[in-house]
Image (tube, rainbow, N blue to C red; front, side, top):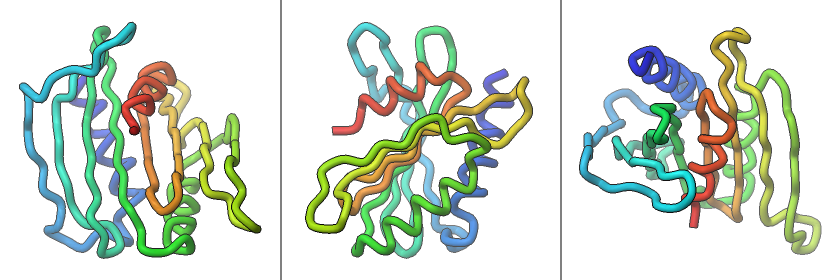
Length: 158
């Protein structure tokens, strides 16, 4: 099952980034001993990596919950709000159904942050949950077959 999850993670990631990620730019680091996120729902960080997305440094991490459910977070800082919003729109194309969308902290006519929770494209038996966030110019993409795991991974965002 973990092999299927890793394959689905890579498919979702590639669909989100393929037009923007130049070939050969992703680097993956296997860090089995990077530790856990403590708390009520411990997460173990099992993979760290980085690459380039639209010419910007992108970092990703894969976490595993105590029940074996895995999830992934990718994040990138963009130079302009327009670039950040374009990435949010690209990630939204991976959503079959938006469950909630919240905006926060309006500065002038611009929303400083937004958060989208959605069900990903896929079959009901292979449900994927997405959390797409933008805090200023930093965009985050979290996905997992478990909404609870995705939300716990989202809690790792500082």
